Length: 357
Image (cartoon, rainbow, N blue to C red; front, top):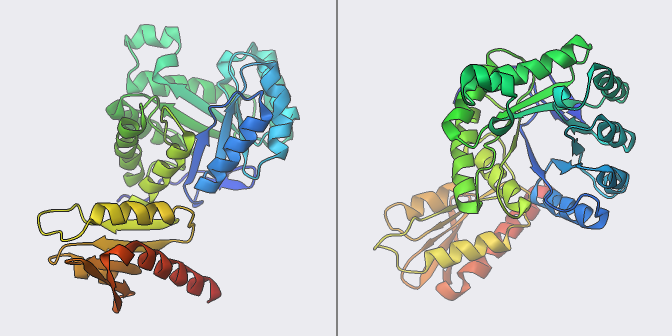
């Protein structure tokens, strides 16, 4: 792991981004933003899963009109995603959003950009410049032939300079591609040219299986290099899964802790009980937990007892039964049929004791 890159700090609502602030997990709704009730419900579900900043698409005035009701119904910072129409950015700011995602070069002429920048500055609302490989300007593509890392960085810096020339520096940048190597190369190049906080992610990563893997490789590589201040996992499907995968990436790199970290056997011929079923059910039943806790579910006589002892709470299963461990000490023996209930019970008790300290 490389040391985290030094960036300037911005504030998105009550969430600090950059500098030494924790790397935050973001997501984006897939509801019709104009449907405030559905959008609020989805955002609140995202928040329960651990989403710390949420973005909504604002494609038209009906969506912009719903922003105030959405903002009033949620408890995490709200970012408005605006393209092409400067008036939607103004409407979003007037509705009280905590951030804008826009590229100033595509929302209108200089005078209109100035109006948006002045309003954002007066409200202390940061702007995220978001460049994707699929939307690089034609003149830049003409020079490079296709979306290279140099093309993506040049596009991002073009928009940054527009804001800087207007005296606006409350900026966050993303520079994404669906190609994992191109994403890594582009962020690495950009990180050496600016000290603004970076929002990292692999765009259009695919469905849950492929998207989680691409995101883990791309985002994980960048974070291991010390690059990244916020992240979003892009998955085709339920955005709650984006949040769950995002947290798992952070937990895997030991950058943040939240909820249950399950350590379980990959399974082999030495297993004497249904380890996979127990691990799956325990993870499901403890999915509501936010307190960090390591839970081991092991079925191998080679590694099982050692892993179970090292976890906060663990079970080392054998032939029809298992030993429950608590902070390295054997607590009791349980039958296989009682393993899930017993492990969940001990984890919940462990968390309650931690809270009382």
